[in-house]
Amino acid sequence: MPYLGYCDFREVSDRESARRSRRRKQARLADLEMQVEKLKLENATLYKEFNDVRQQLHEADTRAKKIDNHFASTILFPEPLLSHLPKEK
Image 1 (cartoon, rainbow, N blue to C red):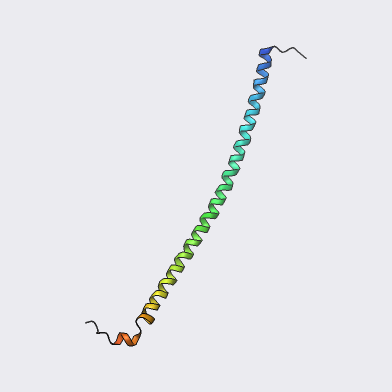
Image 2: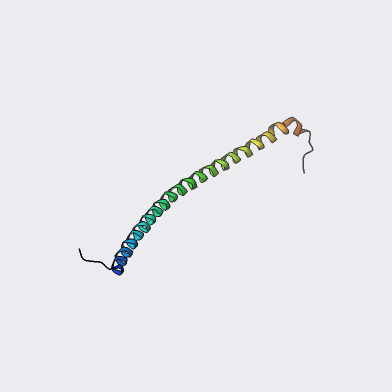
């Protein structure tokens, strides 16, 4: 084995350290890319759930308004009471 001087040793050591650093950085980047894909899927799922709930709320609101209108016209103002009110001209 040839003799390595201190400068040669440092050069080899530094290259190996840089190689390890690049591998760690590459692994970290791959991990972050996987997290991005996972979060994109989760976001799409949550967005769909949000839209479904918003649609259900709209439908419930529409039903509640129909019930309110029905209640107001049949219970609060029954037909016999309405007949005693003066008619509008």
